[in-house]
Length: 117
Image 1 (cartoon, helix red, strand yellow):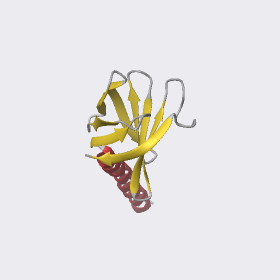
Image 2 (tube, helix red, strand yellow):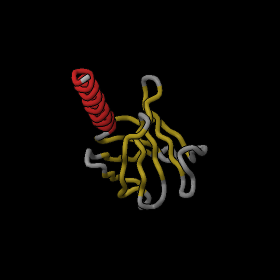
Image 3 (spheres, one colour):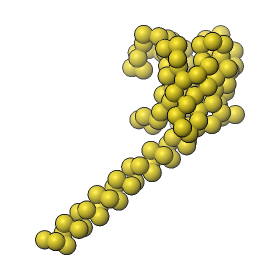
Image 4 (tube, helix red, strand yellow):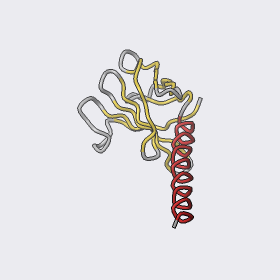
């Protein structure tokens, strides 16, 4: 009984560590500099830092925000209420933008490619 309990505890420990590491690896997949396009197809850059902060060069709308990896995608919440999602679809990354008041389950306000800088 004691050996089975230890075995279960060890399995739980390994499982917990693997979940933590997979979240860290996915976050690293998205951290760094990205080039996206706005509604007018004009390029702009964003920076996703490993500490969960985000910054961008798109006028006043995307200067500062926070981001997290959730369900295999980067979700960026900008101080203005806009939300940007970067997700890998096949062998490319896609950006989806949602205007204030929309959620990421709504139809995106705009969509473009997302490329690492």
